[in-house]
Length: 113
Length: 113
Image 1 (cartoon, one colour):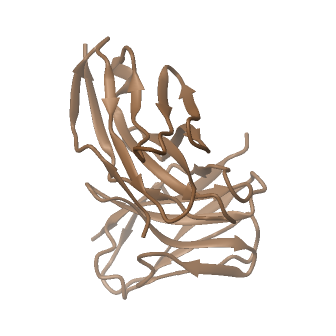
Image 2 (image 1 turned 120 degrees about the vertical axis):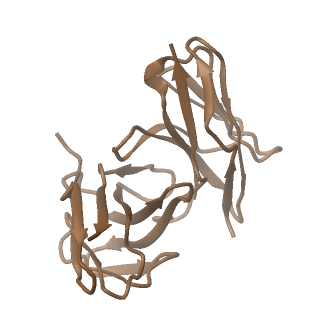
């Protein structure tokens, strides 16, 4: 089945530690996105990528980094500079331009130890 | 900038009741509109979409009509079930390039037997 796989489902970070969240898609979608979800806040865009080796900052990029070396993969690194990383992180992809909807993975829940 | 406003929840209904979740938007361009649903601990699933004025999106008994004159996209269902309990997100995306989604804050629906 085609879809978006996020791993791990749960992740714990120690103070001062970088962690990387994985996102893989086999939908052959060009664009990929990372969102952060906090209770009562809705979803906020962290980074997005329209093509391989290119990405743009979203609304809350500070303390995060990404790479897009392959079309299928868009990992998100939560750095130690992100002072409040506890949240639910969602990865999405989109097939084409214009009116196509985004498709989402099942998310990774990150917590601080 | 673009924005989406949803009615605050939780919305609490009895099974077989009529559901309306209000959604209004502001956009600088001509957007597509979406409703996504999120079940506990999961990612977002596309529920329905509409890409131009007066379009009606429908799926699984849910409907929403794109009203340009009132900048609204209210979600309705004639008879809710316990299994419809979830968080519902209204979102917009401009119809240009790989544009990003702007989400409302979400509305929790709780349906009791």
